[in-house]
Length: 211
Image (cartoon, rainbow, N blue to C red):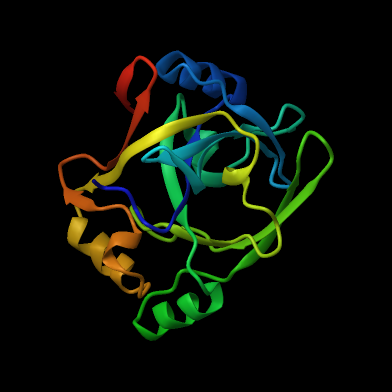
């Protein structure tokens, strides 16, 4: 089906968060819920993902500049975007530090795990640790620690049908993903193709849509 078993969230970024929310609602009929502001100068809105009708630990993050950001943040290339784009995704291994160590032992470096946080509209502080993407098509790793997973919160939801990746250097991406030491089904399948990009297929009330 092309649904990564350890998928945490898919990041869709754009030059305007309000514009992203409107774009997503127009295509899916679902209006993302406000998420909060990050210290990186970004803000987000969230939609939970269901699989076979069940809600789990996965969601879509719409990410754009915070309304009060003095400059457009460079995170995930937001400062270069002219419209919505699926830019990356996260997986949640059982042991973040062990996965990083195993990847380094296999000759790949997912980066250090950095601590980040954001404050929700009701004032709740969410905290997590994550690595930074180092290569196209390779997910970053996340650990929510003691924070309740956002995908299980009171969010609007849409059904996930598949999530895949296409890129010219598919073998290189597959090798880097394999070095993480996760099951092959844990991450998005990578297919060879002339253009790099993700395909996110959702089932909505009005039919199936691919972003």
